Amino acid sequence: MKKIPDYRFQRLYPDKFLEELTKQSYSYVRSDAKYPKFFFLCGKKQDSKEMTNRLWVKEFYKKHDNSIICIFAENLWEKESKIQELDLLTYESFLAEASDAILLFVESYGTACELGAFTIKDNLAKKIVVFNDSSYKNENSFLTEGPIKKIKNSNPENVIYSDLNAIFSKF
Image (cartoon, rainbow, N blue to C red; front, side, top):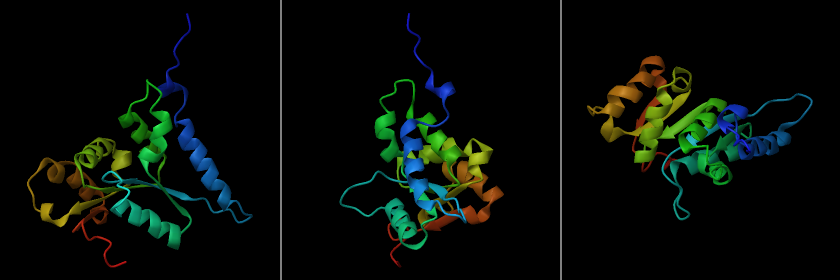
C-alpha cells in the first residue's frame, strides 16, 4: 500500500513559493550581496479593472526599492492548491513565517480572518502592519479590541488608520 505523503511535515514551504523566491533572488546576486526583504501583502481580492492597495504597494516598491519583493498568496496558491493535504490557512501561515513583514489591509471578511489568524502567533503579530479604515478607529469590535489592540500594544506605529479607498491618492 502506497503511503500518502504528509506535506505539512516533509517540507516547510511549497514548491511554487520556493521557485518564485529563487527566481527573484538571482536578480540580486552581486559581490556586495544585499538580500531582498519579502513583504507579504494581504488585502481584498485582485480585480483586473481595479488598482487595489496591495497593487499600489507592489508597484511602489518595484519602482522605488527593488530590494523589497512583494508576495501575493493567490499568485502562488494556484499550483499548491492541488495538494489535498494543504489548506489555505496553513499555506498562508508558511508565507507569513517566511516574510520579513506582513502588510495587511482590512478590506474584506477574508483579510479580517487573516488578521485574527496571524495575530494568534506572537512572532507574526510583531511583523504585521495593519491598515484599517479610519471609520473603525474607535469602534468597539472584536477586530479593534482583539488583533488590532494586540499589535498596537507591541508596536503602536504598526496600526494605521486611513480612508482605505483613498490611501494612495497622493502618489
